[in-house]
Length: 375
Image (cartoon, rainbow, N blue to C red):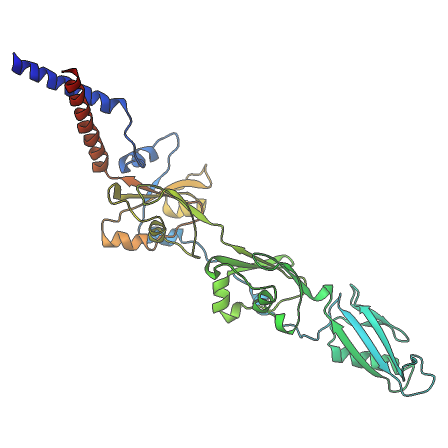
């Protein structure tokens, strides 16, 4: 009878243990690979799973930044003496005859200050009338005014000085010393103007520089601008320069070192880079065959992959990586991550089994303690 009692108590203990395990939901870092595959095939909201290979990497490669078009790159630097609408000029005229039209009391010279070049490019000079100034160099305008005044006074000597005005300026804004800056000899190109505005304080690798000229626009990474002299474009009056840090980010979930939103820290990021940013795969939980990247993919890319849905654009796609082989690791090091991607590392099946057994034996211990208290 004593033996039967012990067996009965053992069954009771087991029943209590299973009851305790079944009564609570075991904590998990995320779904398993099989659960992702099953969910992706749900007819109500299918999300095709695409195994990453070399062809997939080529089809999903993100296009490089547009950079600066030929109209930007072919523009020659402005002459620092070239006059533009909005510039402010001053004239000094010397005459060597008595009763000269412009003669002043300061020894045969006349000074005309603050001549603003109007929107049509003209200034007004007494005894010469409206004079076209925009497009001339300082020397060219000096000769032009001297020729016009020579009709009124013999051999006038003319000196022209220029101060950059509203017309020969660019605007700079963003992550830099914002303001309106004149195009002068040191600031005729983009790098010189950025330096004039105080320089960029953020990491060049994640800083974008955008230049808008009329209806055209181009943008480059600051690091590329520093490395490629061909990108140091000549500026034009009215250019708008915007400097901003990269705002892209991805989300890491599941069996990784961290589950968080992570900002890009380089111009290009691969799946391997992204995993390294969050501490890699959890050694106790991760399933290296179940690394998924969830993305709303462009319709043309989905068509190239043969999984296009004619109804949805963009289309939810799930890319799968298997890092149990060297080839899989190389593929992860080439597959590009994009802004808004969700990287989900699934739990290995044994991890959940270990949690169940740990919870079971913990429950058995609890039941045994209950029995001892009962005795």
